Image (cartoon, rainbow, N blue to C red; front, side, top):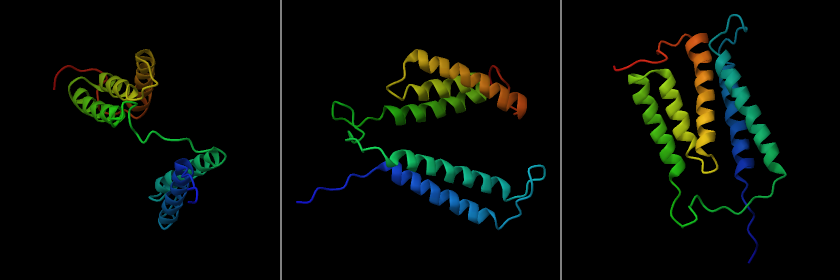
Length: 158
């Protein structure tokens, strides 16, 4: 029996990102790109495609020298499927929707980041808390102050 070649997910995932990014750039150049001061309809898709391709290239290059590790197959050490990450992402998104509607941007941001951070078993509650507070500050500066998003920072009720 021949030994099977190991499959390096990062290498192939990065290559796929490069292909999708270059396809987005190719599709966007059919539209007017414009300049930084007067952006055309193709500018944003071109920029995002280029960033996607660059990110994919960096991921593929960083994975090239690594030896693939044996995977647990997405299972918990007990043998059951590990659903913690997926459930935390869904719960965080639902919490953001509810709290964003009834409580405002800051509680919603804290909830989504805190709950989703707990989906990673390597995070502690303190790390999730610190990350959530930092993201609240960033959300305030970016979305409320710079972009003037019409979502109040804190509100009570609908």
